Image (cartoon, rainbow, N blue to C red; front, side, top):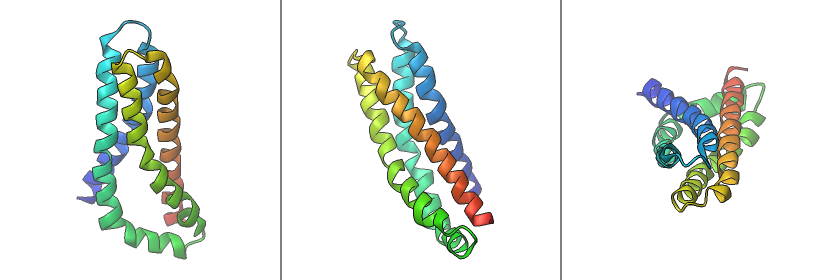
Length: 136
Protein backbone atom coordinates (compact mmCIF):
# COMPACT_ATOMS: atom_id res chain seq x y z
CA UNK A 1 0.00 0.00 0.00
CA UNK A 2 2.77 2.43 0.98
CA UNK A 3 4.82 1.76 -2.13
CA UNK A 4 1.81 2.14 -4.43
CA UNK A 5 0.78 5.42 -2.77
CA UNK A 6 4.37 6.68 -2.96
CA UNK A 7 4.74 5.72 -6.63
CA UNK A 8 1.43 7.38 -7.52
CA UNK A 9 2.41 10.48 -5.53
CA UNK A 10 5.74 10.77 -7.33
CA UNK A 11 4.33 10.07 -10.81
CA UNK A 12 1.51 12.59 -10.43
CA UNK A 13 3.98 15.12 -9.02
CA UNK A 14 6.28 14.72 -12.01
CA UNK A 15 3.32 15.05 -14.36
CA UNK A 16 2.45 18.35 -12.67
CA UNK A 17 5.89 19.69 -13.56
CA UNK A 18 5.81 18.41 -17.14
CA UNK A 19 2.17 19.05 -18.10
CA UNK A 20 2.23 22.83 -17.47
CA UNK A 21 5.39 23.10 -19.56
CA UNK A 22 3.78 21.21 -22.44
CA UNK A 23 0.65 23.33 -22.09
CA UNK A 24 2.76 26.49 -22.23
CA UNK A 25 4.30 25.27 -25.48
CA UNK A 26 0.85 24.66 -26.99
CA UNK A 27 -0.82 27.92 -25.95
CA UNK A 28 -1.56 30.34 -28.78
CA UNK A 29 -1.25 27.66 -31.45
CA UNK A 30 -4.99 26.98 -31.73
CA UNK A 31 -4.38 23.45 -30.51
CA UNK A 32 -7.16 21.57 -28.78
CA UNK A 33 -4.40 19.64 -27.04
CA UNK A 34 -3.83 22.58 -24.67
CA UNK A 35 -7.44 22.36 -23.52
CA UNK A 36 -7.27 18.61 -23.00
CA UNK A 37 -3.94 18.78 -21.17
CA UNK A 38 -5.26 21.64 -19.03
CA UNK A 39 -8.13 19.49 -17.82
CA UNK A 40 -5.78 16.56 -17.31
CA UNK A 41 -3.41 18.72 -15.29
CA UNK A 42 -6.19 20.07 -13.06
CA UNK A 43 -7.52 16.54 -12.56
CA UNK A 44 -4.06 15.21 -11.74
CA UNK A 45 -3.50 17.94 -9.17
CA UNK A 46 -6.73 17.07 -7.33
CA UNK A 47 -6.03 13.33 -7.64
CA UNK A 48 -2.59 13.87 -6.11
CA UNK A 49 -4.28 14.76 -2.82
CA UNK A 50 -5.37 11.12 -2.34
CA UNK A 51 -1.95 9.41 -2.29
CA UNK A 52 -0.52 12.40 -0.42
CA UNK A 53 -3.25 12.01 2.20
CA UNK A 54 -2.61 8.28 2.51
CA UNK A 55 1.11 8.82 2.93
CA UNK A 56 0.59 11.63 5.41
CA UNK A 57 -2.02 9.99 7.61
CA UNK A 58 -0.83 6.40 7.56
CA UNK A 59 2.93 6.49 7.14
CA UNK A 60 4.23 9.95 7.94
CA UNK A 61 3.98 9.82 11.78
CA UNK A 62 6.84 7.30 11.99
CA UNK A 63 8.91 9.21 9.43
CA UNK A 64 8.29 12.46 11.29
CA UNK A 65 9.77 10.91 14.42
CA UNK A 66 12.87 9.85 12.49
CA UNK A 67 13.30 13.28 10.95
CA UNK A 68 12.84 15.21 14.19
CA UNK A 69 15.30 12.98 16.05
CA UNK A 70 17.88 13.04 13.26
CA UNK A 71 20.60 15.46 12.25
CA UNK A 72 18.14 17.60 10.26
CA UNK A 73 15.15 18.31 12.54
CA UNK A 74 14.55 21.51 10.56
CA UNK A 75 13.66 19.29 7.58
CA UNK A 76 10.34 18.74 9.28
CA UNK A 77 9.91 21.99 11.14
CA UNK A 78 10.52 24.17 8.10
CA UNK A 79 10.45 22.19 4.87
CA UNK A 80 7.66 19.70 5.52
CA UNK A 81 5.38 22.28 7.09
CA UNK A 82 5.91 24.54 4.06
CA UNK A 83 5.38 21.66 1.66
CA UNK A 84 2.12 20.67 3.33
CA UNK A 85 0.64 24.13 2.99
CA UNK A 86 1.98 25.02 -0.44
CA UNK A 87 0.88 21.62 -1.75
CA UNK A 88 -2.73 22.51 -1.01
CA UNK A 89 -2.43 25.50 -3.36
CA UNK A 90 -1.42 23.44 -6.40
CA UNK A 91 -4.91 22.10 -7.25
CA UNK A 92 -6.36 25.60 -6.98
CA UNK A 93 -3.64 27.06 -9.21
CA UNK A 94 -4.01 24.39 -11.91
CA UNK A 95 -7.79 24.67 -11.82
CA UNK A 96 -7.65 28.44 -12.32
CA UNK A 97 -5.14 28.00 -15.14
CA UNK A 98 -7.30 25.32 -16.80
CA UNK A 99 -10.40 27.48 -16.46
CA UNK A 100 -8.59 30.36 -18.15
CA UNK A 101 -7.57 28.12 -21.05
CA UNK A 102 -11.13 26.82 -21.43
CA UNK A 103 -12.42 30.42 -21.34
CA UNK A 104 -10.07 31.28 -24.24
CA UNK A 105 -7.94 33.48 -22.02
CA UNK A 106 -4.71 31.71 -22.88
CA UNK A 107 -2.55 34.79 -22.44
CA UNK A 108 -3.81 35.27 -18.88
CA UNK A 109 -3.28 31.56 -18.14
CA UNK A 110 0.46 31.65 -18.92
CA UNK A 111 1.47 33.05 -15.54
CA UNK A 112 -0.68 30.49 -13.78
CA UNK A 113 0.93 27.61 -15.70
CA UNK A 114 4.40 28.95 -14.95
CA UNK A 115 3.43 29.22 -11.28
CA UNK A 116 2.07 25.66 -11.32
CA UNK A 117 5.25 24.24 -12.88
CA UNK A 118 7.56 26.14 -10.53
CA UNK A 119 5.51 25.24 -7.45
CA UNK A 120 5.32 21.57 -8.43
CA UNK A 121 9.10 21.48 -8.96
CA UNK A 122 9.71 23.20 -5.61
CA UNK A 123 7.42 20.72 -3.87
CA UNK A 124 9.41 17.87 -5.42
CA UNK A 125 12.68 19.36 -4.16
CA UNK A 126 11.15 19.86 -0.72
CA UNK A 127 10.00 16.24 -0.70
CA UNK A 128 13.54 15.15 -1.43
CA UNK A 129 14.92 17.34 1.38
CA UNK A 130 12.43 15.81 3.80
CA UNK A 131 13.43 12.31 2.65
CA UNK A 132 17.10 13.19 3.15
CA UNK A 133 16.22 14.47 6.63
CA UNK A 134 14.76 11.07 7.44
CA UNK A 135 17.98 9.39 6.29
CA UNK A 136 20.46 11.86 7.83
